[in-house]
Length: 513
Picture 1: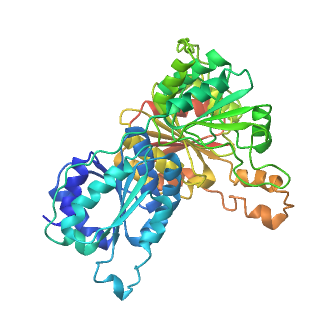
Picture 2: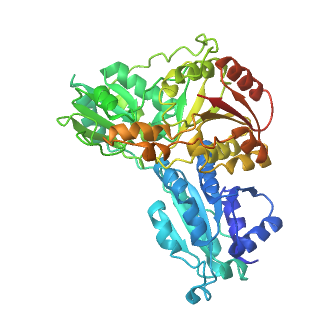
Picture 3: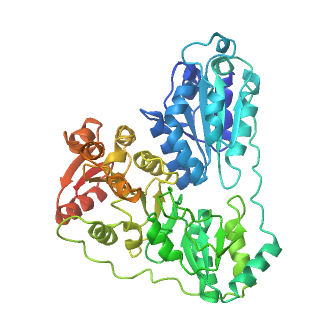
């Protein structure tokens, strides 16, 4: 057995049975091992940012890590933006990066790079294999590290000779450490704060935004009057009819300041302090009142749902009814496309247990809240602000949640960063409907020009314009194997959306706005 074969065997023993890959010469023995070791689903991406973003979406839905396979330091560099997003999401990924053979690296051949240095900022674990006999142990350690709560990226760098060398050994999985429990004293202190009748809010993320966590937060809110809110960017939210509706900390600073005004206590439940996405002239960086006290109920690595359950019991919070899951759906919207009309049509037509992947950027800021009456679904966001995650995230989510329709709300500008994901969707015949919001501009940056007080002229505005020439999304998608159609009215959009749900495989709707 060579090192690459021991790697695949150990991955499978550790429950990692899906690999998103863009391999090169250094990884050929890993690729060959996939023929000799059955059980690994291998998904090819034509760009490393697709590979890493898809691994993120897969793990968010499957609840376990995927592996990636990247080619040397430059391949890792191509995937770093979506690894940054995955790190912010707390996503478990076993990130395997090929490298020069150990004895070839000192020769400084063209692809030689500081692969470890590039991996560290996005990884909770970095190791370079030294010999074929140790690869199995190295990957077992990487799987364990990826599963450390709430999840992290574990990067294993695999020099070519450790892959092709003989002496590989399969290693049994190592159990990850359990999520630490919150100390009882912390719970008692937070309970006293919430009983104090001063304006308070619980800021939730992670497992607190699953259906069980939201129901517990709903109990606490009913018993104390404290408000609940999700942090601005979240890996996954249980949303729709029958779930507890929740708002998110707004992106726009003035809206966030108004929402959080008057609070005396901010209780973080796995979340970070509410801060502005960027600095703006004459605006604060923190979004809550300066005299408010910030409390931590649970860190992201702790057992968040268990902490909420114990806090509800500490408060004596009785069970309360959840929202009516059988509420009437609205009719699909008519007329010109607007964010409100898109949300209305999604609320009318979204299938049960759909997965919505949201990279609609500025157009879609209100769509999440307006879909609270849609059929029950999961809502995934870009978490680290590095655009170009939406198409790969939807690709991975569809692999990780087979049988559930994935709906991508996708801005046109950011879609061009990782448009190759459409090819993977077609190759894998994934059930994804991409709603391509075509405004032919970087609309969010037009808003940011005003926010930072810039005074743009023609040259600056041209830098944010995606026309001249217009992107022809139907031809782009068709060239990558995905059928599509254009909608300029909500009536046409509703027809196309309904049709896409009744067919297998991917479909793209260019919604001209």
